[in-house]
Length: 282
Image 1 (cartoon, rainbow, N blue to C red):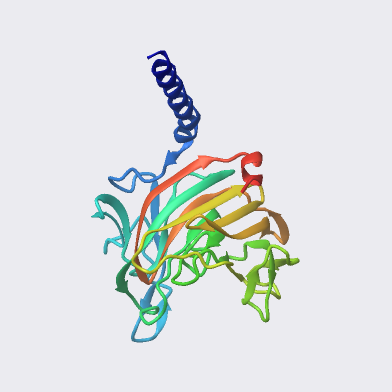
Image 2: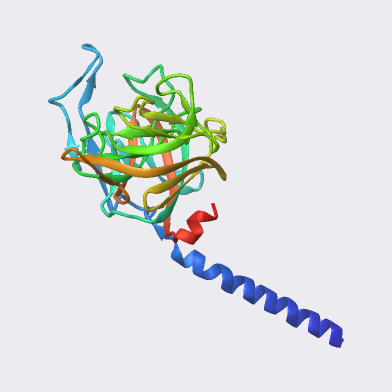
């Protein structure tokens, strides 16, 4: 009997200790989507695509918080409330708050609808971080930022938006075809770089279209890490941008999720503060 009591007491202490260890981490998470509406977010829609003229109409931008067609809505899906992005039009939904030194976790799942000019293309969205400056600066649709690509078969790629710049260890045959390789030299990736504005993730850890994928973006100082479904697919260094002809660090900003011609759902959007020690362990 004494052995049983000692065993029970020991087991109880282990359970309590484990709970105490997990509680602070759970308390650090900040939920960016409340599951009810788009409180805390701004919407922006750039020029509409004219499918007759096969071009974007620069005079038709709907602009900030003007979404008459309901491109950004909250809907029930798979037993929970999620953000639905219809894909009609190019633009994004962005946090009203800027963030730095954080771990962002987001889940996404592709829908079925596709729109011109990407109706025959891969489904495409994107999570932009360190968003600064005016809405619509990038191609008339997005903030200046660093992009974690969300696109069928390409999740985790890096893209430069509005001449943001970053260095990635990578090798490749031609411009815009450099692939992440942690053992390779650092290459400067930007809109004007000889290596191009895109770096391809490695390895491919994406799930099949129609499944929920988990994106983790870790940012500390001028460094970031792209992760998809628990696998690191890219480490990036020296985030910066050009202001008045001078390169300055780009280390904080808003988070923006793109609409880019494809229906997509996002849920469980949350963020936690990140220390340098925690970042270095990833």
